[in-house]
Length: 162
Image 1 (cartoon, rainbow, N blue to C red):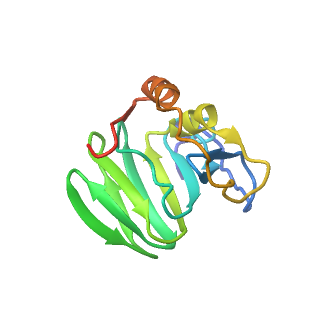
Image 2: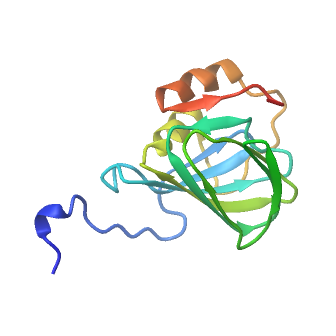
């Protein structure tokens, strides 16, 4: 029997569609588990990202594990390119440079260890009125605003093409 003093949080169960959802960078970003729910241990996000709506190059201050549920993408990890599809698993250690371009609508789970990435998405995104990607953006993202928010959460956004 586990030592009860070690357990920091209670079990959490969320049905599909529960938790907060945000529109950001042309995609739907859904909280599946937040840092608050896991005692800071991890954040689990589900992303639905249309073709052409991938993130700018960036570097996380935490490890990330990605599991592709549906769709395909070209991933760029520390200068190495690879194509991923359903069932692909990607480990991105903290400090690695990452970006990706969906080549079809991409649905994926991303786990951040330790947690906290959910706070970035909550502040940088806008509450999603529907659980679907937003209409395509008509203007470029406010990179200055995103960079300022990202820096508060240990995320470094890099210039496109870097």
